[in-house]
Length: 114
Image 1 (cartoon, rainbow, N blue to C red):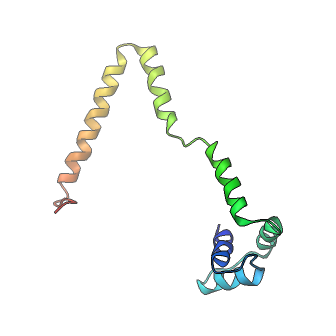
Image 2: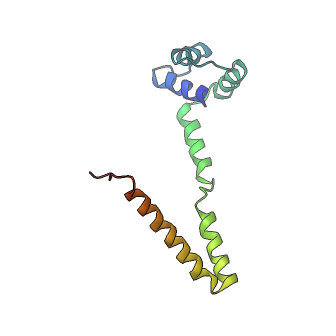
């Protein structure tokens, strides 16, 4: 990730096609080291490509990646269908947990809005 970040910083700094030396200079300025093999691989993959097109392609790929929010919601209907009466008890336990969190905030002695 640091190699990609350094490459993008060099690009933003005015280098349309940053070299290995450019990336190494950026990493050296913050005390990080560059892995030669990974750097050469990155530069080979990006050689001759427009960085804005590469980023746009990456955004399209991320659009199809699940965000993980559906796993909790998917489990609740299955529990309600299987248990019938067990679902309200589970909901009341969840509500109690929320109340406990609010109470623990009061114990800290300060509020975010003071």
